[in-house]
Length: 119
Image (cartoon, rainbow, N blue to C red; front, side, top):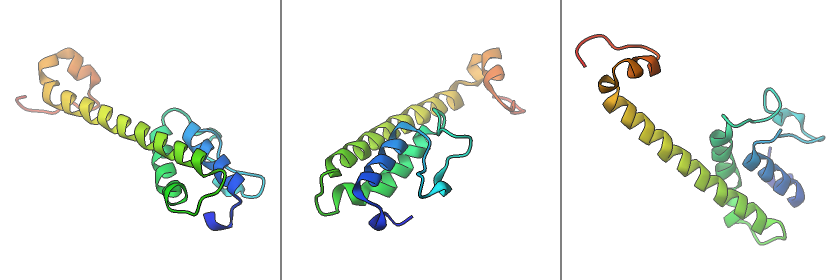
């Protein structure tokens, strides 16, 4: 979809839906339906990434229009949420990889595969 052809009100609506993780699509374009209806909690970081990449130009580089401050707000919040999620996930993976062997049975229960050999 080319955002230049979309009305500003529809851009705002689409940006808001990506930010909140709601069903994406409109009466005009049903290709954008997220599989299974809603984006859901598990897909929020991915939707935030798409929101930042897709609407960054509209939020910060396009000539000013009435919906732009709201789009800018959604893009900034999506970027902050994505950054927070990446930090939390990276921290968890680092802690788990470095301490799994020390956790004994708990580390084994949390593992999908148990590595062979000496920890």
